[in-house]
Every structure is written in structure tokens, then in C-alpha cells.
Length: 200
Length: 200
Image 1 (cartoon, chains in turn yellow, cyan):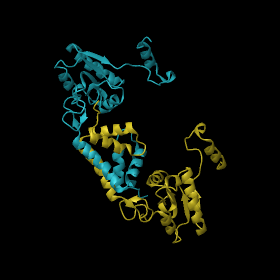
Image 2: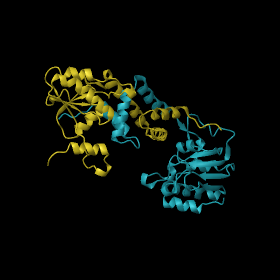
Image 3: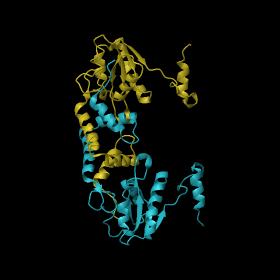
């Protein structure tokens, strides 16, 4: 049996397969889609990757992704520079920006401390965060890392570095998601929701 | 509030969002991944799209994707040219090639008839299929379209065109998937499995 094998097709599928959360079947579907697109569209897709890689860098203040030296949030005069949300990556910034606005500033860690993935604290933007806390402008740092073991550990690690500076450090509340059904909540979340209960 | 908006990042996310089965959150995750990749990798990804678009065309016999004039299956002398599996797209060919080999030839329709998506019979490669049946080489055509309403209708449509030519037309068997659990099978599949039962 001569195997069905088209080099540039296999290569395209392979490239898609390397993306997170894309298995072999999805990769084949995406490759097929890419080949069925109108002529200019696939090129546009391809170019948007190259362009993004070329234009996007880290904001020199908050380390978020930006196409300028200082991102639009950091250069916004009306933002509260005394309140910093420390997040893992740019998607978290997007999430907060979509939620009720706190008009806060951000600091993007660019990951979490994770011994299993060999991510050490010096690979994150912790040094940049600490240098932002120097001037006396910042009054509170909200650790807004994910509620995972690694997010938690990273929040703890950083808060231990900040507390001696006399700056308030807080953590997002744990609890039942709004609209969430109690029977689907895990025990730990439920217990946290009870412990964090407030009078009504 | 100045919105957080980086043009080339939004554009990249938007491009990923246009892919089938990729929602906004996945698109953001993929874009993030693309920006975090080592330098050459993103470029490789981008190039593989352009390259595939440039190299891949339709086999002039079976209409499958290939980088040659005639694909490796059609140009394989040892293949049984009297047996054609009619499939929807190249992924189906890959699936059959991975399964028990029937050493058959294929014909790729490049879709299914679908009024809802404005796909009419003349947009598929039915004409090419019929012209392959001219020479008298082909003894049997297996309609191997998906077991969906559209795949079914397409199989019916094509078989009506082929039968008058005196060529045998068959359809894949319906039934319980191997390894499948009866309690998870829907009623229609179950009924088909019963009707298609064979003596043991």
C-alpha cells in the first residue's frame, strides 16, 4: 500500500497539532479549512501571525503585550496608579477590562511559578513589579493570579516580598461563581464560599 | 476607560476565531501561544500555511488533495481501480487508509449537497466521478459519505446517477461502533444495527 502522504499537508497538520488543545483530528480539520479558504484569506491569516510577532512587545511598565513602548492602560492618565492587579497573562487583563471596571493598573507576570514546568520566579516579571512599588504611589496590590495550585503559590511568594514594603496585598475572593449551581461546585469551593460569607 | 486594545493582537485573535470550532477564549489562548513561541517557530507555522496553499491541488483523477498532478493513490499500480470509495473530504481518505486496507481507490467529493449551506450538486466533483465510470474498469462504487442527513442525501443522489450505468453501488453498514456500549447508542442506530444483523 502506497501511503497517502502529501508533504506540505502533513506539515501543516503537524503545525496545527503543536498548538495547545489541538489534537490530530482538529488539526486535520483546521488544515482542511485553511486549504478551502478563499485565496487571500489564508494569506491574511498567515500574515497576521508574522505581523503580531513583529509588532507586539512587552509594555515597559506593566509587561503586558502592547504595540507601543508603554501600553494604553499604563499611559492612561485617568487610571488609578495606586491600585495594581497582578495577573498571569494578557488574557486576564482582557477579562478584567470586560468586567466591572475598577480603573486599576495591571502587572502581567507572564506566567506562574511552576517547578514542574521549570518556571522559576526570576523568569516572571516580579523584579519589574517590585521596582514599580518603589516610588510610593502604589497603595494596594491585588494578587489576581488563577485559583490553581500554581497561581496560589505564586501569589503567596510575591505577597511575601511585598508585605515588608508596607503596601497592602490582597487576594481575589473565592466562592460560588455568579449564576453557578451549588450542586456543581466542588467541596473546596463550597467551603471557601462559606468561610468568606458576608452578612446581608 | 481607555480600552485595552493592541491592533495586531486583536487581529491575530480574530483570525484564529474564524477557524471552525475555535471560540474567543481558545483564539486568545492560541494567539498567546503564538506570541510565546520561540522566534523561528511562529514563522514556521505561518510558512506552512502559505506553502500548503501553494503546493496542494486536486488530483486530476480522484480530486483528493495532492502535491502532484495525480495523487500517490491514483498513480499506484497495485491499487484496485475497480472499487471506488466515494468520500466527502481528504480526512475520510486518511481514515480509510489507517483502517484495514481494502486497496481501493477513492473519489473525493469535496463536500456534501447541502441546501442550507447553498452547496449544490454541481459544486461537488460528481461530474468527475461519473466520467471515471465510463471506461468500464469500475465494478463497484461504495458511498462512504458521513452518516449525517446531508451525507445520506448526497449518497442517495449520486447512487441514482450511477445505477443506470449498471455499476454496483453500495453504502457503508450502520451499526454499533466497535467497542461501543449499547446504552450509549441512540435508538436509530440500534434499530439499524438490528436490521443489519448477521448470523454467527
